[in-house]
Image 1 (tube, rainbow, N blue to C red):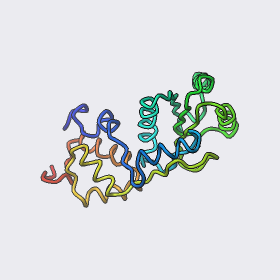
Image 2: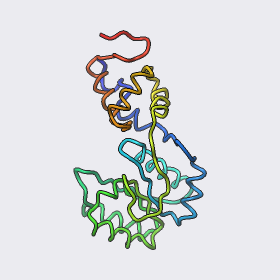
Image 3: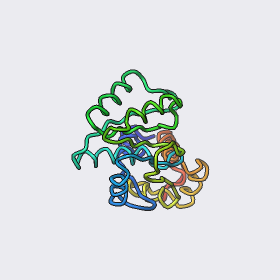
Length: 199
Protein backbone atom coordinates (compact mmCIF):
# COMPACT_ATOMS: atom_id res chain seq x y z
CA UNK A 1 0.00 0.00 0.00
CA UNK A 2 1.12 3.53 -0.71
CA UNK A 3 0.18 6.61 1.29
CA UNK A 4 -2.10 9.10 -0.51
CA UNK A 5 0.44 11.93 -0.48
CA UNK A 6 3.15 9.68 -1.96
CA UNK A 7 0.91 8.32 -4.71
CA UNK A 8 2.23 9.64 -8.05
CA UNK A 9 -1.39 10.11 -9.16
CA UNK A 10 -2.39 12.26 -6.17
CA UNK A 11 -4.28 15.34 -7.30
CA UNK A 12 -1.48 17.75 -6.35
CA UNK A 13 0.89 15.89 -8.71
CA UNK A 14 -1.55 15.43 -11.59
CA UNK A 15 -2.73 19.06 -11.35
CA UNK A 16 0.89 20.24 -11.61
CA UNK A 17 1.39 18.61 -15.03
CA UNK A 18 1.89 21.00 -17.93
CA UNK A 19 -0.61 20.87 -20.79
CA UNK A 20 0.83 18.81 -23.65
CA UNK A 21 -0.08 20.09 -27.10
CA UNK A 22 -0.77 17.27 -29.58
CA UNK A 23 -0.76 20.00 -32.24
CA UNK A 24 -0.05 23.72 -32.03
CA UNK A 25 1.79 25.55 -29.25
CA UNK A 26 1.35 28.39 -26.76
CA UNK A 27 2.55 30.99 -29.25
CA UNK A 28 -0.05 29.95 -31.85
CA UNK A 29 -2.77 29.83 -29.21
CA UNK A 30 -1.88 33.32 -27.97
CA UNK A 31 -1.87 34.75 -31.50
CA UNK A 32 -5.28 33.24 -32.27
CA UNK A 33 -6.70 34.36 -28.92
CA UNK A 34 -5.61 37.95 -29.62
CA UNK A 35 -6.95 37.81 -33.18
CA UNK A 36 -10.34 36.54 -31.93
CA UNK A 37 -10.66 39.37 -29.40
CA UNK A 38 -9.98 37.07 -26.43
CA UNK A 39 -13.03 34.99 -27.30
CA UNK A 40 -13.05 31.33 -28.08
CA UNK A 41 -13.73 27.76 -27.08
CA UNK A 42 -11.34 25.03 -26.04
CA UNK A 43 -13.09 21.90 -27.30
CA UNK A 44 -12.36 18.27 -26.55
CA UNK A 45 -13.56 15.00 -25.07
CA UNK A 46 -13.41 14.07 -21.39
CA UNK A 47 -9.90 13.80 -20.00
CA UNK A 48 -8.16 15.46 -22.95
CA UNK A 49 -6.70 18.40 -21.00
CA UNK A 50 -9.28 21.20 -21.39
CA UNK A 51 -9.29 22.14 -17.71
CA UNK A 52 -5.49 22.03 -17.52
CA UNK A 53 -5.19 24.21 -20.61
CA UNK A 54 -7.73 26.72 -19.27
CA UNK A 55 -5.92 26.94 -15.90
CA UNK A 56 -2.56 27.46 -17.56
CA UNK A 57 -4.08 30.02 -19.94
CA UNK A 58 -5.27 32.01 -16.90
CA UNK A 59 -1.70 32.09 -15.56
CA UNK A 60 -0.31 33.20 -18.92
CA UNK A 61 -2.95 35.93 -19.22
CA UNK A 62 -1.97 37.23 -15.76
CA UNK A 63 1.72 37.27 -16.71
CA UNK A 64 0.80 39.22 -19.86
CA UNK A 65 -1.07 41.78 -17.74
CA UNK A 66 -4.65 40.60 -18.44
CA UNK A 67 -6.72 39.61 -15.45
CA UNK A 68 -9.21 36.79 -15.71
CA UNK A 69 -11.92 35.20 -13.64
CA UNK A 70 -12.38 31.40 -13.78
CA UNK A 71 -15.79 29.81 -13.26
CA UNK A 72 -16.20 26.03 -12.91
CA UNK A 73 -19.39 24.20 -13.90
CA UNK A 74 -19.84 20.42 -13.85
CA UNK A 75 -22.53 17.76 -14.16
CA UNK A 76 -23.19 17.90 -10.40
CA UNK A 77 -23.65 21.68 -10.54
CA UNK A 78 -24.61 22.57 -14.13
CA UNK A 79 -25.91 26.07 -13.37
CA UNK A 80 -24.20 29.24 -12.29
CA UNK A 81 -24.72 29.97 -8.61
CA UNK A 82 -25.55 33.48 -7.38
CA UNK A 83 -21.90 33.89 -6.34
CA UNK A 84 -20.70 32.82 -9.79
CA UNK A 85 -23.09 35.30 -11.45
CA UNK A 86 -21.58 38.06 -9.31
CA UNK A 87 -18.10 36.98 -10.41
CA UNK A 88 -19.12 37.12 -14.08
CA UNK A 89 -20.67 40.59 -13.59
CA UNK A 90 -17.59 41.90 -11.78
CA UNK A 91 -15.21 40.44 -14.35
CA UNK A 92 -17.19 41.93 -17.23
CA UNK A 93 -17.35 45.32 -15.51
CA UNK A 94 -13.58 45.28 -14.88
CA UNK A 95 -12.86 44.25 -18.47
CA UNK A 96 -11.38 40.95 -17.33
CA UNK A 97 -11.39 37.77 -19.40
CA UNK A 98 -14.12 35.41 -18.19
CA UNK A 99 -13.03 31.75 -18.29
CA UNK A 100 -15.79 29.15 -17.94
CA UNK A 101 -14.90 25.50 -17.56
CA UNK A 102 -17.88 23.34 -18.57
CA UNK A 103 -19.82 26.04 -20.42
CA UNK A 104 -21.64 23.48 -22.57
CA UNK A 105 -23.37 22.19 -19.42
CA UNK A 106 -25.07 25.52 -18.68
CA UNK A 107 -28.80 25.82 -19.40
CA UNK A 108 -29.39 27.62 -22.71
CA UNK A 109 -30.74 30.80 -21.06
CA UNK A 110 -27.75 31.09 -18.72
CA UNK A 111 -25.30 30.56 -21.56
CA UNK A 112 -27.01 33.24 -23.66
CA UNK A 113 -26.98 35.65 -20.70
CA UNK A 114 -23.25 35.02 -20.13
CA UNK A 115 -22.45 35.58 -23.81
CA UNK A 116 -24.47 38.79 -23.86
CA UNK A 117 -22.90 40.05 -20.62
CA UNK A 118 -19.39 39.27 -21.85
CA UNK A 119 -19.92 40.76 -25.31
CA UNK A 120 -18.10 43.96 -24.33
CA UNK A 121 -15.95 42.52 -21.55
CA UNK A 122 -12.26 41.71 -21.74
CA UNK A 123 -13.08 38.38 -23.32
CA UNK A 124 -14.80 35.04 -22.90
CA UNK A 125 -12.93 31.74 -23.18
CA UNK A 126 -14.64 28.47 -22.38
CA UNK A 127 -13.78 24.80 -22.11
CA UNK A 128 -16.47 22.52 -23.51
CA UNK A 129 -17.03 19.07 -24.94
CA UNK A 130 -18.68 20.46 -28.08
CA UNK A 131 -18.99 23.71 -29.99
CA UNK A 132 -21.04 26.31 -28.17
CA UNK A 133 -21.34 29.36 -30.39
CA UNK A 134 -17.84 30.76 -29.90
CA UNK A 135 -15.05 30.39 -32.45
CA UNK A 136 -12.85 27.38 -31.73
CA UNK A 137 -9.62 28.43 -30.07
CA UNK A 138 -8.09 24.98 -29.66
CA UNK A 139 -9.16 21.35 -30.01
CA UNK A 140 -7.81 19.12 -27.27
CA UNK A 141 -7.19 15.49 -28.03
CA UNK A 142 -5.45 12.59 -26.38
CA UNK A 143 -3.38 9.64 -27.52
CA UNK A 144 -1.48 6.73 -26.04
CA UNK A 145 1.74 8.60 -26.86
CA UNK A 146 0.51 11.62 -24.89
CA UNK A 147 -0.44 9.38 -21.96
CA UNK A 148 3.05 7.85 -22.00
CA UNK A 149 4.69 11.32 -21.99
CA UNK A 150 2.55 12.35 -19.02
CA UNK A 151 3.42 9.12 -17.20
CA UNK A 152 7.10 9.93 -17.81
CA UNK A 153 6.52 13.43 -16.38
CA UNK A 154 5.11 11.75 -13.27
CA UNK A 155 8.09 9.34 -13.24
CA UNK A 156 5.78 6.33 -13.47
CA UNK A 157 7.27 3.30 -15.27
CA UNK A 158 4.05 1.82 -16.69
CA UNK A 159 4.62 -0.69 -19.48
CA UNK A 160 3.62 0.31 -23.02
CA UNK A 161 1.06 -2.51 -23.22
CA UNK A 162 -0.53 -1.52 -19.92
CA UNK A 163 -0.67 2.15 -20.94
CA UNK A 164 -2.41 1.21 -24.20
CA UNK A 165 -4.86 -1.11 -22.42
CA UNK A 166 -5.80 1.52 -19.84
CA UNK A 167 -6.13 4.20 -22.52
CA UNK A 168 -8.52 1.99 -24.48
CA UNK A 169 -10.44 0.84 -21.38
CA UNK A 170 -11.07 4.48 -20.45
CA UNK A 171 -11.86 5.58 -24.03
CA UNK A 172 -9.00 8.06 -24.19
CA UNK A 173 -9.92 9.82 -20.92
CA UNK A 174 -6.46 10.38 -19.45
CA UNK A 175 -7.85 11.78 -16.20
CA UNK A 176 -9.87 8.55 -15.74
CA UNK A 177 -6.69 6.53 -16.40
CA UNK A 178 -4.93 8.50 -13.66
CA UNK A 179 -7.84 7.89 -11.24
CA UNK A 180 -7.71 4.15 -11.96
CA UNK A 181 -3.95 4.07 -11.42
CA UNK A 182 -4.30 6.08 -8.19
CA UNK A 183 -6.76 3.51 -6.82
CA UNK A 184 -4.65 0.60 -8.02
CA UNK A 185 -1.51 1.91 -6.28
CA UNK A 186 -3.49 2.82 -3.16
CA UNK A 187 -4.54 -0.84 -2.96
CA UNK A 188 -0.94 -2.00 -3.42
CA UNK A 189 -1.44 -3.40 -6.94
CA UNK A 190 1.64 -2.73 -9.08
CA UNK A 191 0.65 -4.99 -12.00
CA UNK A 192 1.84 -3.52 -15.28
CA UNK A 193 4.52 -1.30 -13.80
CA UNK A 194 7.85 -1.86 -15.56
CA UNK A 195 10.51 -3.54 -13.47
CA UNK A 196 8.09 -4.55 -10.75
CA UNK A 197 6.46 -7.90 -10.16
CA UNK A 198 2.77 -8.29 -9.60
CA UNK A 199 1.88 -8.89 -5.93
